[in-house]
Image 1 (cartoon, rainbow, N blue to C red):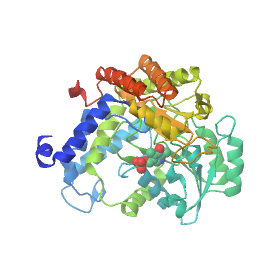
Image 2 (image 1 turned 30 degrees about the vertical axis):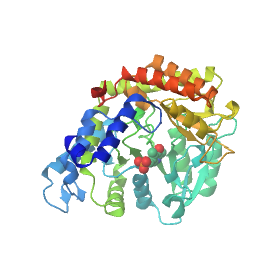
Image 3 (image 1 turned 90 degrees about the vertical axis):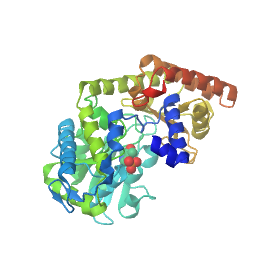
Length: 416
Ligand SMILES: *Cc1c(COP(=O)(O)O)cnc(C)c1O
């Protein structure tokens, strides 16, 4: 980065220090990952200089010979990885992807039904503060108080009574596999389209270690940067019959020119996602999450739903006498980076809720296996038990740094 260093030392310094932070800390934020050096190179390429409103073979500007090749490759690879009829790779990110789906099928005021935000749903599934909740009539389903899980009979009754135009299956903080077949049956019974938002678990689906929602969904959205380990971006996939409506809703419906550098990086990520190495990666994500969950449970932590079936875990800290924010800050001081999170039926405020959320996608990318996950569980317990003790935090931070020094993350090998 010699040009950046010379021309803008302030930003250069921030990037250098962030690189070091990502190298030295254990990153457990469930939505984050480390992309490969190849994905990073595509992201930082000259494709950022190009404008290409429209679609492959149907552009408004000239000079698209290579852009069309790039976008066609991204689409073909994604179709193969997920086994879908149609893919749109242009959404800028997960939130605009969901908005495009709503634009394609809804009129203002129409009803959508999604998982409640404090129960693990996403802002874009109808939360009041989001455009999805302001322009559409959003109803929400909740989890069960005792099990922390979804009750499909209740969901069915609710769907039959509110009759949504779109039923949404997807989450940002639910540690279980959704029953897509059941969602399909409910959608059919109430005449709704089924949208599966697989932003969090798309990498597990691509890796073949999680049931695929593709046979059941009318439309699927996913970010490309979470477990899927691509650049910041998103895709919308659908059955052939919805292809034209989806494409029109993305461009010109909600967006202008696609981010071609991101499209290229998505193509690279989809090539990676089709490999055996990625299948092994996805399987290790699950083993790592399970190991961390088991370690924490054995140390008296209360995991929402009693464990995990995917890459993420949600811990209710109420029995530990510490709030989610306080815990997350103490852990960050100790080099263990995660986020505080509401738990179902949380009595605390969203900014300082009762829980913390963590995921295994990023640490698995740097090569952590079961032994390292167990160690992380022990550290989390130690820091939470001693959350006012900055000496303990400093000691753990040093141990974390030591461990990380022998597991260089993809693209950060030069730091060891
Ligand atoms: C992360 C996420 C999104 C939004 O993605 P952004 O890229 O942050 O806009 C949408 N839906 C779900 C379920 C997510 O977890």
